[in-house]
Image (cartoon, rainbow, N blue to C red; front, side):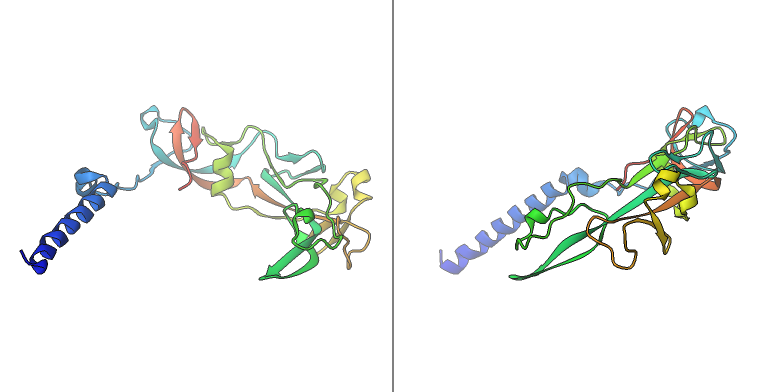
Length: 230
């Protein structure tokens, strides 16, 4: 058998092995023949009645989102009469390092994350605080409901847009108000608003308000449960 005649069967064997590998990666013949899963369409239901026949189904509920007690940031003394979810966003003025190839520069700016300056490539003596005095955090109302349903709080936070909530020094307890100033919608802990120093804080808030909304979740008893994020 000539070399050319031997090459043709070898090529066929290689193609067969590649095809077998591809079929295995797709879950075998069943995976190839199986039709793509059809996305589940939520069932539109009345908010005022929990129908046991919809147990376990994906449902869409429209109604007024309410609660028994509004969300409250006890640490800062901030609340709102309509707050279903209240989110405190905190940033600290810190040293940051930017490196391009072997050239690094360090400058200070606002960051919501704690930056460990001891890990900088160049140690120039610039250090950041070890922790945030106040952390970013979400606060939730008690007894949240939409009609007869009790939606999970993470479902509410995921599906209902948060809007800015303006907080002034008058919203803070007197002892905290004395330590903060206001600028451009932020409350700021620092001595010079125009020239912040490393360690200074600035805080603002967003919130989900009570009102008419549409929530889509899995009905489990009277709960609306959020689907796992894709």
